[in-house]
Length: 170
Image 1 (cartoon, rainbow, N blue to C red):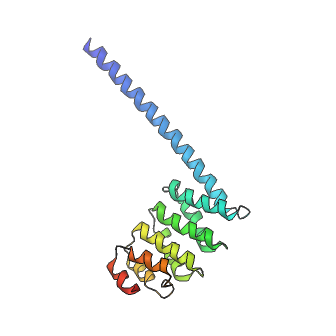
Image 2 (cartoon, helix red, strand yellow):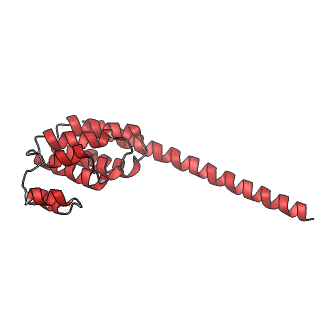
Image 3 (tube, rainbow, N blue to C red):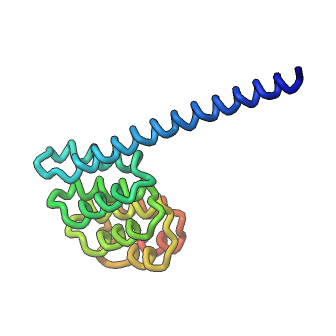
């Protein structure tokens, strides 16, 4: 009798585990499809800037484990003609906190060389969200290109947890 109850419970536990795993697989498939859809919108230059900005924001939330999302955002940040779209890509790269170093390097590159103060500010915000403490990121934040001295820029640096940045901006 005890053996039968134990077997029935074991079967119930295994069935529950199978349902949970199947649900997780379906959810992952749906998430992958959403990421691919957002990448398609982001990289489609025939779409409106607002749609592409929305897609970048979506990737900042959905694309955390997606190398293709990171690469799409990096590509847009480095070469898109619209500063608002590049800015959204920079913020999304920071928000998603991708595990590789490529997004950090792309944000540093944008900070050092983008012609738009809006994009450079977004790169600072992206680096700030990631919490980068690498020497190269800190040096990039101290460059003349980064020091646009706009009130938003100075405010964002004051919010930074790095005290050495505060003294350089004052």
